[in-house]
View 1 (spheres, one colour):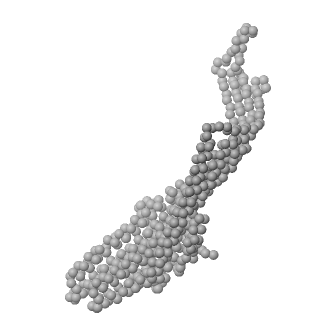
View 2: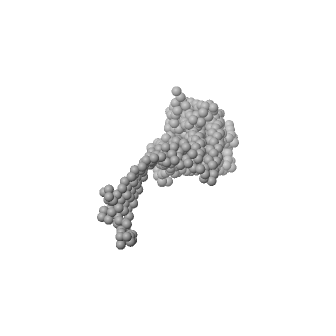
Length: 470
């Protein structure tokens, strides 16, 4: 079976794809080389023991644990779970208990002329209590529709949590890739500066021999000055990337943190064809599943609204107590207390409510139409995302292949041109051109790798799961 690999493995896949194309010396040579030999060496990380060093997977896991959006989505999922319990409450009996106590501050008397006086008709203490259990038997299908809707809400809550997790994974992965690329650009800009400084030494030697002018020296010093700002910018971009990573991980800006990545010996990568990616997205993309559930929820809402036209039937059983006394709060004797019990059915049928129910039904039917349109639009949008990421990934892979051997060739050309210049067989313009060719080759390779990383992460997000297979 095809084995699905992680984002970190995918990072290594592209590194090693470039290594196969651009560095015949292999990983061992990269560790011992005094200067970069191929494109893969631009991404070599030497120091893995800095305080706060984390891997890309660790950064993703930390973001999933600490990010506010994830915590909010988790709470929403719990809220939806409670809604399921709320709808199930209509299935269970409803039990109520009520009671009252009255104390007569001034006992009322009734005048009876035949008796020649007054008679007290109200005792000082009066107590009553009622208990009832009722069970809803039928409500036009509203109860079963409500239970289904609660279940849909619960599923939707966890799908939204998964969608939030996928977004965080994509955000952190792309951010980490940018940090990796910034590190590579530092190597490119530093090497470009070193080459410019070495060329200044070569020109100085020519100047001392009377074979170069002071304008050549001045021109080269300007080039050195022009090479420094891009290096400063690359270093700043690297630090900004780490600062943004701290923000995503809810860390203080002053907390020590550094990113570590490792190159694994993986030779090639493959991913499914476009039509299969569409199928995977239809099955695994959380927001599409949520859109489908919203359509089902809207359908159940129509059933609940229509149920108000049919009324409801419920069964009940109740008991009552009443008592009155001048001496005790709650008398129990037969002479001053009474008890009763009843059981039966309640039927309620609405006859006319001023077209309120019809209006609600129409509103919910329109809401269902909206949910269906949104579901269809979501699926179309996801197909666009999948194809765009797939096209970008293919294009980036082709650019990586197109630069096969370019960096090594450009560096060899630079070394030979420098030697020819030293021996008077090449001009300063030839020297400048060879340096520019190497610089452009490295920039194009780094940009191609960056675009491949971004497209890979976007493709994983677009289909809802990791699709690179080994």
